Figure 1 (cartoon, one colour):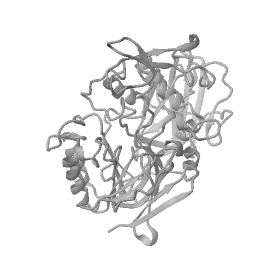
Figure 2 (cartoon, helix red, strand yellow; figure 1 turned 120 degrees about the vertical axis):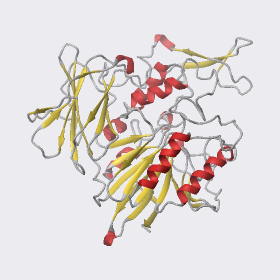
Figure 3 (tube, one colour; figure 1 turned 90 degrees about the horizontal axis):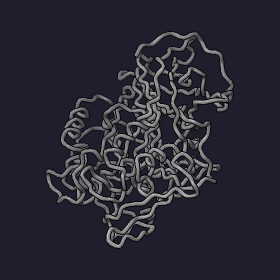
Figure 4 (tube, one colour; figure 1 turned 135 degrees about the vertical axis):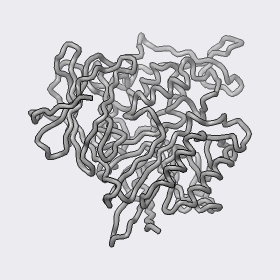
Length: 493
C-alpha cells in the first residue's frame, strides 16, 4: 500500500474523552460499529472499520426476529429446538413489517471510502494510507495493515470516511501501543476475556462493565478467547450472523474500548457456527447459515490476516500463542485415539516447533477451550474432556517440559486456576464477561486441581515486570467491577 506524508490535521470536535469521534457530521457515511485494531507487532498493526448508513444503531424498542422450527413430518412450527426432532429447519419471521435493517441493534452498511492516518504519538505529521472502498461483499468493512511502526511506542490513528461522491463523512480517532522488540526487557500488562453473550449485558445503558474497568488498567493489549457472540438461536442466515456483530460492536462500552486498545481475537464454537461444532457437522438447526460462512464472517469482522493460529512476541519476557480450535477438529463423536484431533497435525507441529525455538522468558498458550479443566463430565468438546484424552495428554506432556510456560483458556463460564495432577501444567480460566453469563459449575464443587475457583464474571489481567531485576509474571482475576479476586505471582525459573 502506498503511503504518503500528510500535514498535521486540524483538530476536530470530540465526543469521547481520549481521542474520540467527530460529532459535526450531518451526512454519512458513518462508523457506528467503531474501529478495531488488531494483530499488533513491534512494527505492524491492522486497523478495521465498517461504513454504516446511520450514526447510531437501531434502538431497543424495535422488534426482534422470531425464529421457529418446522417439524419435517407434521409440518407444524414449534418454538425451541427439540432433541426428539434434531433436524427440524428454522423459519425466520420479521414482525411488524421489520427487515434485517430495522430490527433491534441493526446497523446497516453503506458504500463509501475509508483511509487511515497514523503516527507515533508526539510526531508532527501523520502518514496516510490510500483511500479504500468499503467492500459490499464483506458487509462494507475494510482493513488496513500499517507497517514500519516504531517498536514500544504509543501510536495514534484517525480513520476518515467519505461518500462515493467524495463528501466528508465521520472521523474516529483512536490509538494503540506497539510491542517492544524481542530483545527489550519491558513491562507489559494485558487483559483477557471470554463468553460475551448479548442478552447478558450488565452496564447501565447497555454494554459490559468489564470494558471501562479494563481501560483503567491501561492494558498494552487485549485478547478475546472466543464466544465473542452467540449465533445459535438467531443467526439462521449470513445476514443475521452479520447482524450479531453489528449489535454487539455498536454498544458504547465496546466501541470506546476498542478504539483505544489493540486486540487479538480467537474464535470458538458460538462465533464460528453453533454449540460444540466441527467442520463436517451436518444439521438443519442453523438454517441457511453454514459453517464455512461462519469461518468467512469471522475473518471479515475482526482485524486479522488469513490465518487464525499465530504467535506474537512482546519484548524479552513474553511470547503468546493463539490457537485455532474449530477449523481442523475431528468430530466430537469420533472415538478417541491418535487420529482424533482438535488442532490438526499442521497447527500442532507449528506450535511445538515455535515454542521450542522461542527464547522468551515466559511463554503463554491462549486457547479458546481448556486443556486442564476440570470440566463437566457431560461435555465432550475440549482437551479436558474424555473424548479428546489422547491429544490432551500429548499437549499437556509437551507443555509440562517447557520452562515457564502457562495456559490461559476461555470457554468456561467460571474463573479458575488449575494445576494438572499428572503433568503440573498450570491453567488460568478468565471467566465470562458478565455475572449474568456465569454458571455451569458451583463454588462448592472444588477439585484437587483447583488453586482458585469462582463462578463469576469478570476478566483476567496478566502483568510482566522485573522487580529487583527478576522476571515476574502476575495473573490477577478481576470482578466485573474491577475488584481483584485472586492474585498469583510467579518468578521465572
